[in-house]
Length: 422
Image (cartoon, rainbow, N blue to C red; front, top):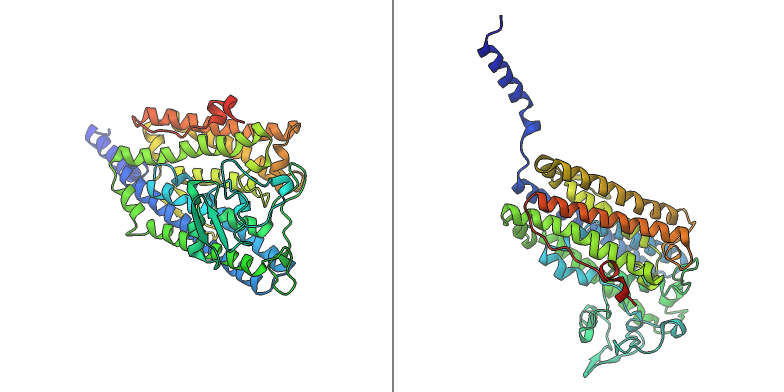
């Protein structure tokens, strides 16, 4: 006969063996891993930016169709890890204040270089520097300020960034480099991306004039991108300001930071400003990577990044995995019903964005064609992505409520007041 004491001892032994699998996920550990994942993503982004820098240096050393193609390929590869970082923007003031230096959009590309005035226009009521063309002009006037642009270098580009307080004066970052590599996409919602020639950078066989200054601009913008990503990777390092900020927060504030980033990117930024706005207007100028037709990848990797942040596990482009305590595990313990809803919503949004990516990658139809007026099937696919992301944001909000947290999710007129969108 088994005694009660024996039964209790056996049960205690069983619990002791199984204990680790039932250990509660600690918010402090979640925040440490959240910072570790951020460091991994930004370090990966920096490595790929350095690869881009190498490819652009090779292109400038020998500008031809092959080296231009290699530089474009490197640009697209650099976007993969960076887009996965965007869930850190909202809620982390250090990231949000810095982000405009590397990923600001849309941009008035006439500030930088020549444009097709038939499609782009010659003036803008909102931006006096709309067609300033710094590459062609050694002096630029923005409002009352006259800027000496005789030497194109990093210092000049920093002066031009948001010059006159106008956000569309984007002089640096991924999209300025994208424009310099591809040029304008003049195909509208028809097939085709930017078609800049390699000879725009060939001083011995120069096309479209000012090849020497265009070379200087591309070099300076690329070097600045590396500088800026070096800064942010450092901010998440062992003694970095961003890491210290999030790991120093109390339990509720730390978890709210993560959920603010995921909710705001899902809803106002990605579903609203980056996707729904372009769909409402059927306007390719509103797509995120509008010169290269790489928008499908940018949207998809935003979602991949949000899942990585939520699950606390990031797989780098080199195959290295960073993982640890996660918000997903904590949610499953504290709010299992809501956690399941978030998991399901994330899968649904990922599937919708993956469908767009696969369609574009197959060559069947680019993202700007999908949002074209009258393209019922393409519009439906893009709307499914919007719906998936909105559903994801709503599931996150429900989780926030259940956990007793408070966050503010970024809104968007495209979703909240579409009649105001013109």
